[in-house]
Image 1 (spheres, rainbow, N blue to C red):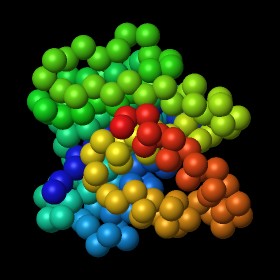
Image 2: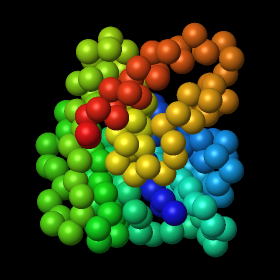
Image 3: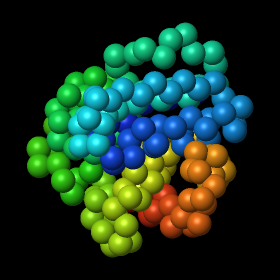
Length: 178
């Protein structure tokens, strides 16, 4: 199985981290992985995205223009990448903040109120883990059980005290699309 995904949003939303955690989970599961970030010079508040590919087979190129799944955390990301989803693919978007949702009929569309759920958890920084939970539940690109180990590898050790909160957010994210 191969999952070619792009995670997109504003800088500071944890978009690159989402893709990195997915990539580390793929490595832990002995899969082939590429992770390619892209962001403007302003990073926080500017647009950011990353392409993460997880595959059971060799990956020919990390540079792709169409995706199995698009994860969009803001309106510009929906506007830019909705048409880049392969027919039959998925788009997951933050339905709390996106006013003009995707409308294509040949893809699976998942409205995920992750900003709203992050507020309920009293921590806006877990928005990315909420969405990653939804992504993993929809795509099955990696096993959900692998995410905690990947998170510990991505987070600096001084932040490991936040792993339980992040894993709680991940599980809530999974439940949003069940």
